[in-house]
Length: 135
Image (tube, rainbow, N blue to C red; front, side, top):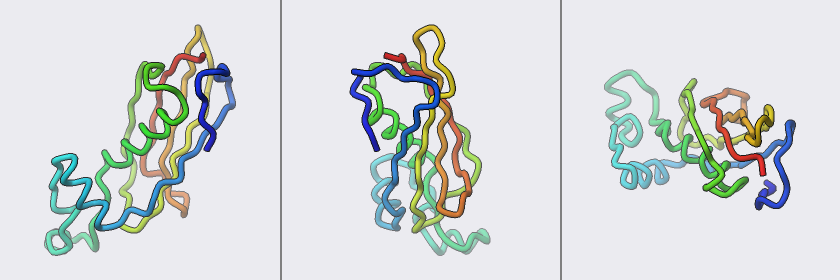
């Protein structure tokens, strides 16, 4: 991944990627503790089985946090003007998500970004957008 330190202006077509670490059970337990989200479907296999789910899965907000990291690795946080996402699929335990962003357009000094989190099989688990100052 290349980091834009603010020296060059963003232009339409620019892309950036973050390969996330494997989503382990330990990572889910640590995230539950850090976030305060202790929903059993993220950490308790027995609770999952009780409601017909085969295994635990990642918190949606963990994927959103990875996208936030992608953004702030690319541009300084003070350039971020808006950020929003929509969850579209679960991220199973042991998945290795990939965050991607692209500059859709630059207008009036603002770069409009398209964002995704996807799994190696192509499943998009999260779609988002952000607006950052272009330079």
